[in-house]
Length: 209
Image 1: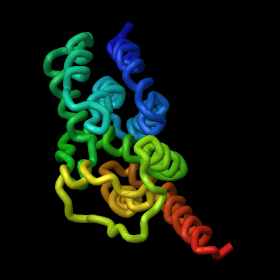
Image 2 (image 1 turned 120 degrees about the horizontal axis):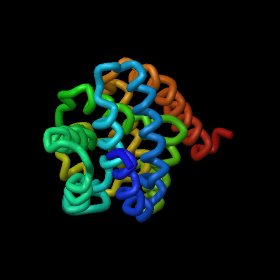
Image 3 (image 1 turned 135 degrees about the horizontal axis):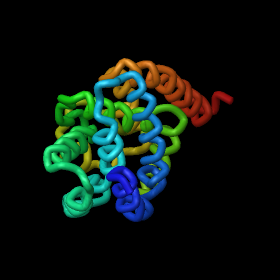
Image 4 (image 1 turned 180 degrees about the vertical axis):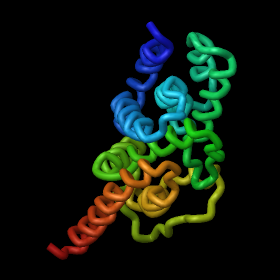
């Protein structure tokens, strides 16, 4: 069993405990996105990218308050200490953090960040947003809320905004934050689909049938 297979077997039971927005199917889709970007980035380390994808939500603050699982799993993988640190740095750069994400300074970090953000866009991104909102008891929409564009990570994580507000605070911004050329191409159509969906949702809820 290689390190990627080893990692997959260790993380799956963790993701199986999460709601549908961050379950193992999410990880499988992000892997598929990462491989599509890797095809255009021949200098990237495939092993680092795939393990970082598998690891990237293990200690997500939305579900966990410590890094114990991440550190325990990494310690068991058959990779060098240098590569382990590289993987940790890639994982640390993935989270959006309300626009306060850590810089993606390597090609591997840029690939994993883009691959994860692609899964927050398009039809899947819409489904995940409402799955997460439902799991957390959030309203579908709230016209009294104003989208926040200048906030700390604590503000971003601390307020339970309505699901539609999340489109304005994060999802509609992601297209212009993609780091790789392939990521930018793939994000464009997914972004437009979300724009059209929100317009249709507004028309239906406003009685414009």
